[in-house]
Length: 255
Image (cartoon, rainbow, N blue to C red):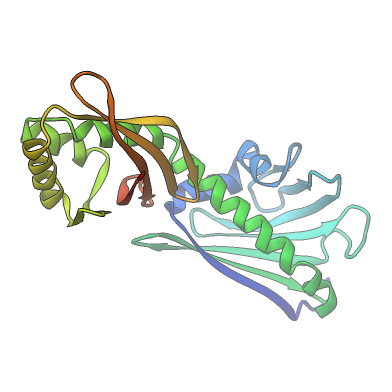
């Protein structure tokens, strides 16, 4: 292999733990979900790496090093030999554990600067897809959490309401709308109690399907009176953390 002195480097925060992320480097089904149908990886030193892009381009390589859940190193080149043949470049992925999730550090080493530059947008795109794939897995139960959030606004018992909120939201949860600026679970519980006291007999529920992208969920809501008639409506923007818990909510009211 020629000397690989030209580096393409990229770093991004992924709101998932290292163990969850690393499964995409050891499980061929997850590897294929990231790269494309038919892609596979034999996760051991000397194991083969195969990437089949949706446009039919095929990349081949070999695992050089793998240390779970910290790093994986593999060679990368094209079956066609262009712009580089199999084995002609080296990819290193490092996973750094953080409180907010995991910092992924990518380094792709090439022998030529021009070839490196051809891959800048490709990695930007592929790592964006990867982060969204992880977000979808971590937040697979997001819609159920949204429903539990809305249901909590109708719970009269403070202890039951706190227990329900604690199962779906972080202790530092924030809530903002035109009438509230709430910080923390205890303050949120008190705010809901006040809402129930001053606006008795109302229930809130999700309207339509919750829409998720990259740890942000949009969910329309409607408030109904005891007679079932709609009294008000709007949309909430939910932010989810690396554990899939609700971290912040911003509410918008329909005029």
